[in-house]
Image 1 (spheres, rainbow over the protein chains, first blue to last red):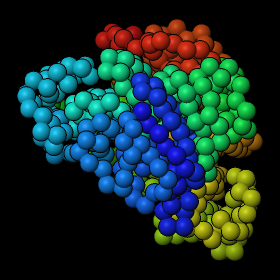
Image 2: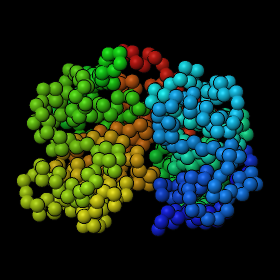
Image 3: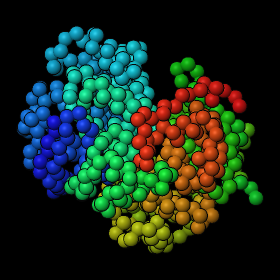
Image 4: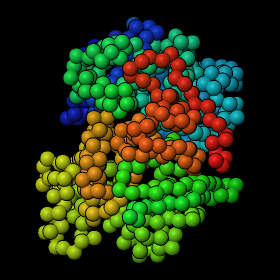
Length: 246
Length: 279
């Protein structure tokens, strides 16, 4: 479903992504793990068409991606960002935020679709005419998920979708994402610094360091601690150390 | 021995649309030379409790307490001059993100030297020596380079080390660290917490570590207070965290995804309205 080959991204002198290749099958969830500055978010943003000046090749659903993306692409691929406060328009109501993708993609029946979208992410009807600042962090992230899904994409790109949330709210949003993924047969790429979150949602993952993928492994290998690259081993050790299972 | 800090029956309210909105509702704690973790979700009142110890709350806040004392000073009646003498000298505050809490247009070392001079009598040269010494104490390999660097030239972990050095400069008895590592990567997070742990133990200081991360805090503190809705739900020794009894504490622990075992669904915390009522 998603194929990235030899992706390189430079920001001026900074070589942010160096020769990254990965493939994600239809319906699969793939994790990208690494510390800040490892290039994991840049890979995701390049896929989404938010980074200019990349080289290499990328394709989604067999269609090669150019530097400009068309409406079909945006209908297929949607993204959820880390901070829902920054990614939702502060002066638009939830209703307006959710209508925008419908207008862009010329999808009718907005009223019913918005009501259904809110129901799907378990938000009460009463939030429909509220502004983002009137919602809690978890509710805002649900709105961001609803906005990403309302035009019916088949690929969902998730950039640290729960790291700005409290642990209890994170659990709710992770459960929601797991349900929606199963219900809609979504293909996902999840970027996170948190190994346990990635293991929870993804079956395969890649570990990035200094713009490169240093290791690819599956969930079972990760959980068993059988990583081969020292950086992956270090991340696993820290994760165990801090969640008290070490 | 008198405790470093004592809070009895602290209430803090903020003005809201429908009258006073309580942020802290009857918190009591006594702090010795120990590491105390104050844990809770956003809105639990943990940061407001920490700020109250420095009386760094907005002027609109209403603070009531039976007792609020730090290093023998009564914070409820202390005049602004007395508070200024207390802040920095006896009690230091480390905030989440050094990007925002360091002065962006002043070299890092100058900021540490300034903190030192504000509380010691000494020449510029002595202040510089002290700052370089402090940079070495927070395990910065090249103190001279970092002394002259501006905050934007430092990584998050380095910035937080500078922040810690600055807070240690006046030699306080008590450090309040409010989410000191939440903006940092896991590898750096562990280094900074180990550093804080060592400095606090070596100097025999008290530490209040405020965080939303219960497992992390339990790893570095002696004692934990779990807050919810402005109240203390449970207080326990960090080593006994696995034996926590309160359903809120258990819920906080159980809702975390685990690396060692797959769970099809994460348990979601069911909040009991009774937690907000009296004991």
